[in-house]
Image 1 (cartoon, protein in one colour):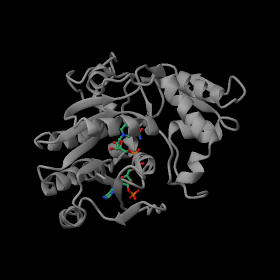
Image 2 (image 1 turned 30 degrees about the vertical axis):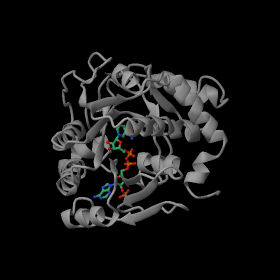
Image 3 (image 1 turned 180 degrees about the horizontal axis):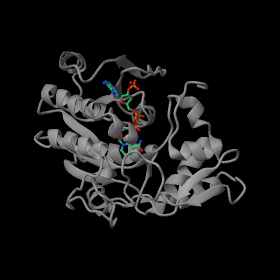
Image 4 (image 1 turned 30 degrees about the horizontal axis):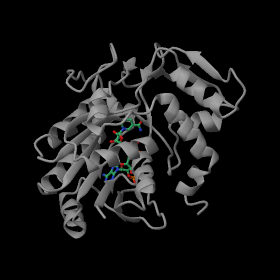
Length: 302
Ligand SMILES: NC(=O)c1ccc[n+]([C@@H]2O[C@H](COP(=O)([O-])OP(=O)(O)OC[C@H]3O[C@@H](n4cnc5c(N)ncnc54)[C@H](OP(=O)(O)O)[C@@H]3O)[C@@H](O)[C@H]2O)c1
């Protein structure tokens, strides 16, 4: 069984990957301030910006693969607190890169936000244009990983299940659309992917030993409005719950990109299999919701 170290195991992506892979790989998950305990998954506290702690972790566990999902992810907080952004997105990555040996596969989870979103349909060779602190620091993290001989850089956008007391956009639709106004931007496009679909693609990428930069996204793109509306419909909610609005004039602290649709041809060719559409990914999400996956992840049912 491959030994996989997942950083950010208490986060949305890390916990979802650990859950999907718990019977497939030997998982060791690292959290910092929010312990996540799950039957059958080993987890441990560490501050990944501490070089000594990182060295000790790798020495003890000797992973075959590191999935580096820990980061400073709140885009607006990054803008207000660039030091927090730098520590979480660059320093932590550098500590891991300095401690890892050349045999270990290093998977860096990056973001679609490295592009400025002026046109969409990006391919991996397109130039990046960093429009906010989050994007700048995530890209600096990518750059720290590039010299490693066995690195995979995953540019993605995700929705899934938080095990902490916070919600992603899709979870807000599930929880709040019936009682509160949810703004769905009609002028903001993405190719978001359900974390459980990402888990399958990433697992296939590990089997094929992919290296370099790849887009891990759904094969189609929609506006945030259409995403939320489709999700609400698939959940069987009354129609018209999502409020169509524009991101222009919305009081974000960090600049946002209008069109972050990603081209996934490179990944599709490398894996030799068709990648899901965003509608497929939403269907999968809704089916898992109805099957109680969120309660299982939170340890509320076994
Ligand atoms: N969420 C999205 O929409 C999205 C989109 C594109 C790309 N991404 C990328 O996907 C990855 C995962 O995102 P996410 O949404 O799962 O993030 P998240 O839910 O905010 O989780 C962040 C994780 O990082 C850990 N962490 C932060 N500082 C740490 C430190 N000093 N030492 C150890 N661990 C630390 C946190 O641990 P504690 O909470 O225990 O402190 C938490 O587990 C990130 O690289 C992000 O840039 C996310």
